Image (cartoon, rainbow, N blue to C red; front, side):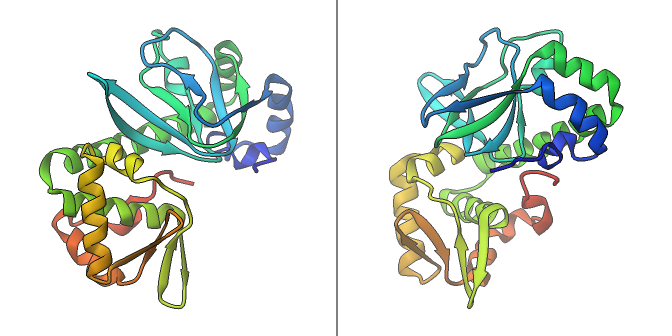
Length: 238
């Protein structure tokens, strides 16, 4: 769990004295798994700084869910709406596990931005990162088959949650096939078949919902159509 404000990406460039002034403006909150912190198009003003846990950012269309991103410790949610004149939520946010956050109101967040321009610069950087991720998501959804989409998502997960040990690359994150399907805009059955194919080909192993990459080179060869720069697979800039 994050205990220092300096580990929150948007505050990472602030001096200690500034963080001490900000701390009294924050309220600690705990949310249970499956709690929805934001609903798309709702009017609300809270900004959330994630201390621990994982959340999905998603939109619904005709009861179909598309996951736009996964937020983890150190991330901020709701700052884009706070910086806008329109308080309608851009997307929904749901806890994928028990979550701990610092919560701050819009006016207090705007006060911080006014007092510390480095926060606004960091918010701009975060926005650009999210645009890059969404551009890649559009490619996944519109240009590639399920096999290529799945391979690239697994590589994304590895670059963000991976651990390397004795030529085995573990994605240290329990992830459901239904979540992967919603991240790629495909059916759960398609994901299940593709993962089974990867296992049969010796590319991947799955144990207790953890993914283990057994043949990273072969998996990367499936991703080559995208010509992705590896470092750009990171979901945040910190």
